[in-house]
Amino acid sequence: MGMGDGVNSLDEATTVFMAVRPQLYGIAYRVLGSTAEAEDILQEAWLRWQHTDRSAVREPKAFLTTVTARLAINLAQSARVRRESYTGPWLPEPIDTRGDPQLGAERAEALDLAVLFLLEKLNPVERAAYVLREAFDYPYQQIADMLETNETNTRQLVSRARKRISSERRKPVDAAEHRRLMEVFLTAAQTGDLAVLEDILTEDVVSYTDGNGLRGASRIPVFGPVHVSRYLAAFGPRFWPHKEIEWVEANGGPAALVSDGGAPVVLLTLEISERGIERAMWVMNPEKLARYVASLRT
Image (cartoon, rainbow, N blue to C red; front, side, top):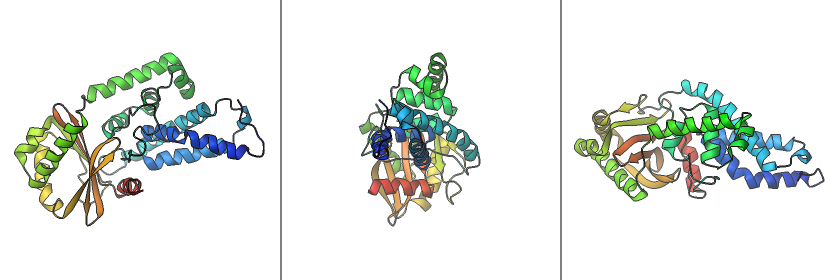
């Protein structure tokens, strides 16, 4: 059914757009790993929707999803170049998912920060195909139409993405065990307990700090249980005193928001499998922290 072009067409267009906005945001955020960039995509999608001959659009949701996916792919291609000049490791931007645990999707896939981190290793088209299939359950042919390719190629894109992610990510533990190990990790990091840290870290653990040049933020990843433990023990005495820790939710999982005098300084998330802690991700970038905390306090 077409949208019509009567006196209320813009009101109707707004109603349609707002109804699908959560899904559009969920797609853009997963492809880009950035709340700010996702908002930019939605603004552009809205402008295009306003200036489209909506009377010729038979499936508004499909139209808007296609526009959003293509815009996100284009921005992801340019974002990759910008992130090469980023100072230190770049981590996906955390998001508060309490109000929308699945962030507009059919299921909460490709939302975990560890998965978003791995998605960055895929090219933007693979990323979009994986997100549309795994999180939003779109049929392969419909994804092919959105990405201007064919169904066979779309299946290959999704398959490659699945294999890449499964090869680098082990089965996560349940929420209770995740929280327990996070508490053990934080206590050991604060006290500099090397023995405990080395016991709970996997043999190929990596610690990433996203500070974009912020003083005190490591500009290189730290690899291996010995190096990560020693780094945390050396870093601890000058970092942890007078800090407050608040348990929060980020991307559907437990996280620790660390503040100094009420001012957030880092959000910690851990990727934990049955082997132990696989990745530690410390988001210190002030802009990312500010946006996350603002959504947390609303």
